[in-house]
Length: 193
Image (cartoon, rainbow, N blue to C red; front, side):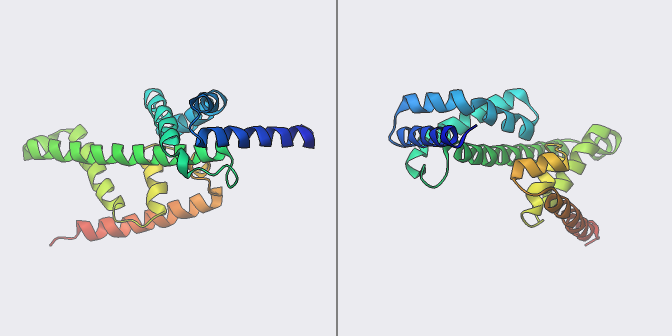
């Protein structure tokens, strides 16, 4: 693409962003047509669930419409702003999923007798997930977010790096340090009181 064509594209994106900010619903439709697939891809990679990715994509464009007054096309290009909203929305969805899993696990454990808990490997897996979730809640950020994406979304280090916009080496460092921190938290948790 020539410098002139790139400049025209940049101007086109800026004008579209200004139209969106001004409340032009046709601009939202155009933005969806241009970057809906990108947002959906981010959502699908982040959640690993096609149906949930569709919901996240819809949430992103609704959030963009509702938050359009805070968008400044002179500071950040519209597609970058949408990607940022997508990443935050995926993180929120994953956190809600982890929270729901913890609540469901607690309900299963509370309703099950001790012999059932000991005999049922599914319940053991749920209890393990609850213990890990509770331990992760005590791990500092950004290590917690990295580990949640690894454990609950089952993303690879490279996918986490892309999702969070971090260098791969930084993600690997956060995983290592986060696992060490989680180990310390769980060891303290396992000590008899």
